[in-house]
Length: 318
Image (cartoon, rainbow, N blue to C red):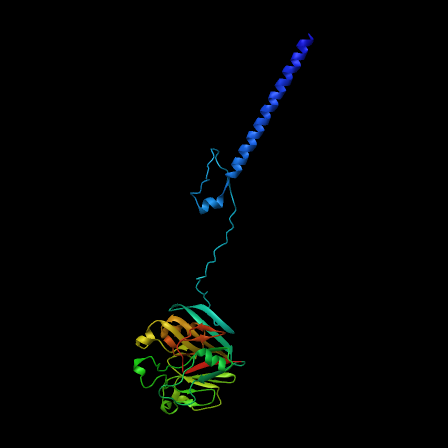
């Protein structure tokens, strides 16, 4: 009986020992397999950058893919929106806006200033009449040398790069009175039918023909150009058959609405369409200026242009 009891203990001990060995072996195997899996984990970024990447010694266990968050930034989309339609000019400062007229929608770059607090002058590169190889300046030079805050190109002239202008390079033959009270081309504009705008302290005046204009030097600037776009609120130019005025282009202008003076550019328009824009904006009077390669508008920097160097310009000075 005693021997049988001792034999039972031995059998139980052997069974427990065998179980312990089995469990220990299982744990060791599990740990070894887990380390192998860890060694073969492949970050998602590695797979994305090199989809053919494989471990040098591929295990039989399927590798665990560890997802890695890849931060992204939203792309910056450059605005290509057309300026919103605003059929009234700004009260002050600069605006780029769309104007809807009976001739279509046009983009306008426009600067406004109340003449009661702004001095409008006409500046010239030359100090007296000039017939050839005349001096010219950039619009920014005109603005800076007068301590101005805005400006636009002035009259038509004969650019030196035009073959037809040989012998009269950079000259202009229209009536201009500059800030120094000098009247250019006075003699040959006594009977002129070209319109004129004159600026003085606190007021602006448009006339339909230079023949109506004396040689008053109390003004701060006088400038003749053509055609007159709007006069007393009515459109005065509807086209003249000239391909130059009938083609689409940048059309510079000077205008007024009461005591507010405006300078600006109507983009991609004929001169007749520019007149429709002036009417829609409610201008009392508006005069077309030189355009094409001479077009330039300045307000804290170029808003249009810079165009070629020019012999004269209209400047806003505080």
